Structures are given as C-alpha cells and as structure tokens.
Image (tube, rainbow over all chains, first blue to last red):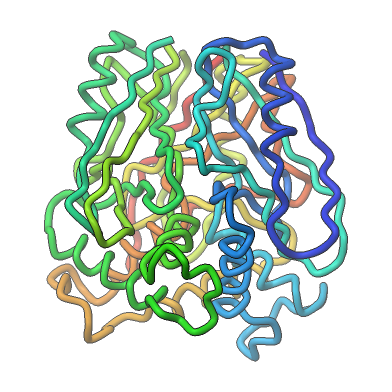
Length: 136
Length: 136
Length: 136
C-alpha cells in the first residue's frame, strides 16, 4: 500500500498549495483506481480544499479565520506557547486534519477549481509533515 | 473499484439530502464490506452529516452559517463573483469536502438520525458533481 | 475487512480522548498497512484530532465553541430537545463526523502531539457509538 510523507516548509501563516506534491505522490504510487488520503500530523496547521484560481479568495479566507479566532483573547488559558498557538488549535479543529480524495485513471478527482492547501496557523515558519496514502 | 459521479441539482442555498443517492451508489457497487467516500468537486458547496428528522434543525444550521459568515462583509476583497461567493468558500472550509463512511453488510453505517447533505452555499440554482467511491 | 464499534460513555460536554480505544481496534485488525476510518454515528457529538499534551488547550477549545454557538440563541427554532441540542448540531457540523488516518507498520500515523477526541456537545452523559474501520 503506497504511502509517502511530504515535508512542507511553510514561510508563515496562510494557505500554501500542495496539490502538485500530492498529485506526484499519487502518480508515484502507480495506483489507477483507489482512494488518496491526505493527513497532516500536526494540530496547529490543517488542510483545506479551496479555489485555486483567484488568490484573493485565499486571502479573504485566512483573514476571516483571523477575525473569528483572534489572538490574545482574554478567555484563553493555554498561552504558554505564544499568542498564535491557541488560535492555531481552534482553526485546525474548524478545518480538516485529513481529506479523502478518490483516484480515477491515476488522477485525483479534484474539480477544475479545486486545489489542496496546507493551512498554516502559526506565525513563524514551520516544517510540516503530511502523509499521502493511497489505497489501490 | 466502483465509483459513481452524482449530478445534484440544487434549487438554491441550504441543505439538500443526498442519502438515498449515495446509498444507491453503494448498492450498485455490490461491495459488502468496505469504505464509502463522498467527495464534492466544488469549493462553494460542501458536505455535512446532519439530523434527518426535524427540518428545523437544518434551517437553524443554515441560518447560523449565514450569520457567522454574512454577505457584503467590508473586509472581503474577493467580490467579483457576487456577494454570496466569498461566504460560500468560507462556509465550505468550515464544513467538509469529503466524508468517509464505512460500509458493513452492503449498507452505510449511518446512525438512525443521520442523513448526508449537500450544503449549497450559492444563492442561485447549481448543478453539483459529487463522487461516490467505494473501496471493497 | 476488520471493523469494530466502540461504545463510549461521555460524562457530559467536552473532549474525551479515544486514542487508546482506536489504536486497540487497529491492533486487533492485524492490518499492517492500510487506512483507519473513525466514524461517529451521531449528529450532536463529533470527532476532532487535537493536542494531547496540555489539558488547557482542550479546555480553551471547548470554551471557544461554547462562545461561538451559545445556547438559547433567540434565532433558534429547533428547541424542543433542550437548549444544548441545536448548538450541538452546529458544533458537530463545524468539526468532523469522520476522520481517516493512515496505518503504517500496524500503527496510526498520528503526530507526537496528536490525540483523537470524541467531542461531546450535549450537557448530560451519553452513550456514543463510534465505528473504527480498517481497510487492509
């Protein structure tokens, strides 16, 4: 059962497209018909399938989540790892840790306007581990 | 590996049940024990498993998301596709693009009160493509 | 195809770790390389992968969702099952009903700080059914 761990270096908070890396792992698996699962091994970054056309959509998405879960909320008690840590955990819970995408004819069945994104929630650069698993 | 693409016509925003269509695709696959993945090929509509009994629960759910992500938010910059487009992308990120449901004895293991819904976030009618994939 | 239904007794609202129960079901399946799907058969409780180290992170997460979706919102019409019911459905839609986790070498590929949690949204104790399914 083919599996690959991607190491994604994120420059900071925001959406980072990983569609090409996932597609490459699916291709390397040589699976023609099956299911690809993308799983992120962190709780302060997450996954999201979003529009891959206009960058303004990703900008607005990221900005919405910043307003919904602002830093320095006086309710937070988990503050020892920095003001961006607790909002990161909440944003991760509101989005996805794993996404299943069918593979047909050796290709992910993504729609025309869909891209796969690593949603980095921490302010500083990180090295993220994403498992791409294909059931053939 | 059986796979089917459903074409779902949505009359407008809100929750549209697709449990019967998904169950039919699982039945057609003839898989007795396996995993069914439901994947929507869009970023302005999404999937959600919700209560199938009282329609008021779906109404309140849809209304909550409209209040959480209102149209015409002055922060939005991605506005060229209409006032309902950016809220649609955000609502899709807050819910699910794919859902995995185990199949036992040829049937989805949904709980008694669970239904599968296509959550349409655009105001106008749309033709949505949903892939139902079964690993046997 | 190995499958197991866990019965989880929740003492009330909040995050209840089920990592050990899921890992045990994966071990019992004897699958070395595959995909584990965790599926909750309810719409007023859900699943989330969260930090397993500091309990304050789970406390803040639960408290955030209570503020985001407060009880007794005058907009709610689905109120016959109690003030905690409609918020429960919304919180379930905002988190996950199913999570796919790859299995490698007989073990879930969870990151060091990741735990699997049943997120109980109802105030009173419940008996929750969670299906753990492994494709080998």
